[in-house]
Image 1 (cartoon, one colour):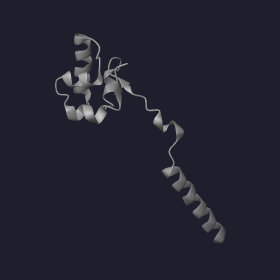
Image 2 (cartoon, one colour):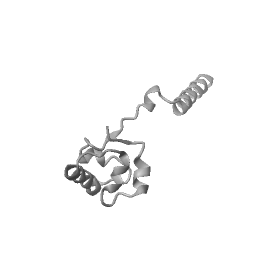
Image 3 (cartoon, rainbow, N blue to C red):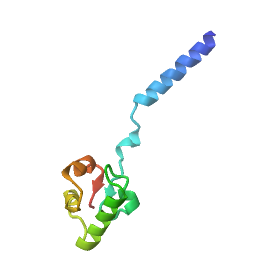
Image 4 (spheres, rainbow, N blue to C red):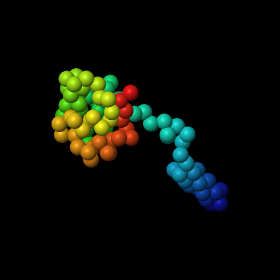
Length: 93
């Protein structure tokens, strides 16, 4: 029983360390480029479903590339709130 208890404690300790440690690669978030993203890629954004993603692509094709991320709000139905939820996830590079 003692050996089993020690193994259990060790397993719990390992899980706790893994749960609370931040991997070195976690800061390398790949942003979605509004000027290159496909409809499927755009649907990964918060609050952006198929219909809004299609509108973003249509807007880009009609008006040219986005010059700043805030231009996303020029797409019909995209609000300040939606932009704020995604501003750290998008780029226009």
